Length: 179
Image (cartoon, rainbow, N blue to C red; front, side, top):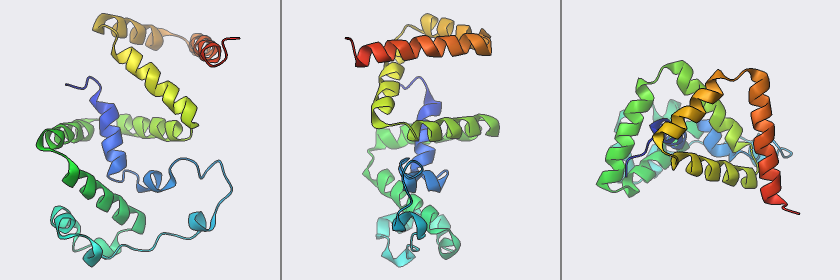
């Protein structure tokens, strides 16, 4: 199955590999709650020798400067290496393609995706599920309809966009509480 929106997966892949590493450690909920002792104390460094041999081999390019990397980055790289090792060859090829597409994007576009991902992570689980559901519904539309909706959104004034959001929120509220 070919994914039609590689930039989303690129953003997810970048997030999983630690871009930026702080997102992966937070889980999105720390901003809304009182800081805990774990949130205040920085994570301890991850020793290179504590990594399995397969991960060390994958991360060999970081071996010389491993101790200089921030602990959050070390952990993100280790998680990314573990995920890579668990992928089958088709998944690895897809990840390579998505990463190449991510790197080919202008930095402004990547930053926009990072900000959107950060906002998504701050949503409650129910809202995240709704966003995923809406995206799946959008992705299943015929290409001409997606282009039409996207064009309509891009041509809308800020006030029109606000009205569109209000209508969408009204539909969401109706789905949650049909009474």
